[in-house]
Image (cartoon, rainbow, N blue to C red):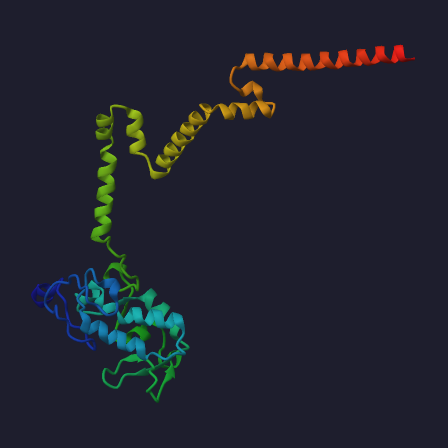
Length: 279
């Protein structure tokens, strides 16, 4: 009850971060975030908070390890998570604190003069120390950065995981269109009067292409079959049995072969007689 109950589910300002425009109101969509955009579907943040994180990201030392940079910036985006944005305490799950500490222990950090909280060193800083020399462990690292390590339910703390993006309106519209398309197969059957064409029209594009290609091949074969020159060419190649006339062509070929053999025999006989009379 009381103040805690009144603020349940409402955005609450967070220490060193700029004040929320949604302070006292619910988290909601914010398309104008300049950083931490994974939370744009539902957040307490606006451009003011994310600009601060973006500036911090630009000022990070070039020598900072990639893993430390990535995890630290996720930690900086934590207030934009609606669970933390609407909570009075900045609870970070202990496993994530451990990941941050392990990844950053050899990187250089300092205490911010304005907020008195831990942050990575910038190019302009003159006094910096390695994190392992400033922090006693994972929980201490989160505490020095303005958070509190939490060992309880992962639903009550920031675990470093960014929310999955929601499907856009165009994607949802496309899915609905496909669903309607699948439901219209019966209508196609009614218009064309046959289940065959209905199945083809409702089939995937690849099957439609195969169907069209098959029809094209059949049409070409039927067209060629009407050309006499085609069958004559088959006969010339010794494939007469495939030509026009079928058995008639084969019989004609046999007669030609027989006549040629008879002519050769007669020529040989005449030559033999000539030799006999000459001798």
